[in-house]
Length: 363
Image 1 (cartoon, rainbow, N blue to C red):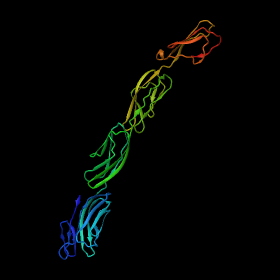
Image 2: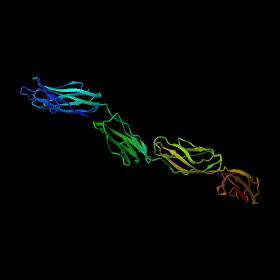
Image 3: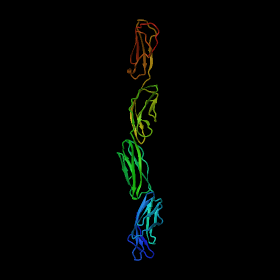
Image 4: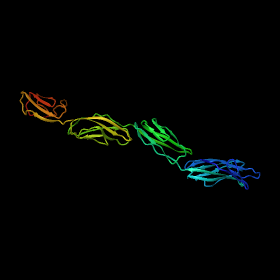
C-alpha cells in the first residue's frame, strides 16, 4: 500500500497546499521557497526499506532533515541539502503516522506527513526430505507469516523428473537417484521474503540379490541369507506369498533364513523387503527339504572265506528318489576282492575275498 500526504512548507506567517500534496508557507513575495516531494511504500519487519525524498524549489544549503511522530522503529532519515532517504530495516509491525521535516537555519521549513504499514515478518522455512528412486516424491516449501499479495517463486537446479507447483509450493515427481542441491527464493509485493539452499538425496531403488538357496534336510539345522541394497534406513524382511518349510523362519531385521526343517518337500515362497519411504522389492524363492537318510536294514554276513562268493546288502531310506542316494566307503576299507555297488537306496557288497583278516569300514 502506498500512501502520500500533503507536503507542508512552513514560513513564519502563511501557508498553502501544493499540487504534490504538501502544504507550504509563502515567502515575502507570496511564492513557496521549497517543498518535499516523495512517497513511502509499505514495508515488512526484517526487510530492508528505502524511500527517496527530494526538495523542489530553492532550498538553502544548510537544510537539516528530521522525523517527528510515530515512525517505524528501525527507520531513519538521512540526507543532503537537496535530497534524503528514509531507510533502514523495520523491527516492529503496525500502522505508522509521522512527519519528515527539512529545515534551514533561516527558519524556513518544509514538512511531509507520511502514513505507512509495516507487515509482520514472513519467513521461508522447511527442508526437503530424502526419497527413493521409483517412489513418487512430494515435498512442500513453507512460509511462516502472511505474504502481501501473490508469492513469486524462483527455483534453480531443479532435478530432472521433478516439477514445482507455485500454487501449492510443492515439489513432486519421479527423480532419478542422486544427491541434489537446489536454490529457492520467494518474494511478494513487498519484496524478497527469503532464500534457501536445500539439499536432499534420492537413494537407489531397493533390490534383492538373486540367490539359489541350498537344499535342506529334515532335522538338520539350516541357514541361508538374502541380501538387499538401496532404499533409505533399515530394511525389514517378510514373506509376502507362499510359505517357508515348517521349522524355518526369516529374521525381520537381517534377512537370515534359519531353523531346523521338520518336513520334507519343495517349498515356494516370495520374500519381501521394505526399504523406507514406500520403497520395496520382492524375490521368488524355492527351498527343497529332503528326508533325513537312515539305514533301515542290513544283511551283511560277519564272516567270509577266501575265494568263496560273498554277498551282503544295506538298505537306506529318507531320500526323495533313488537318484538322490550316493553310496561310498567313508572310512576303513573293504577286503581285497570285494566291491561296493548300489541301486538307489540299496547298496551291495559282493565278490570273492582275496585275503584273510578282520576288516572294519563305514558306509
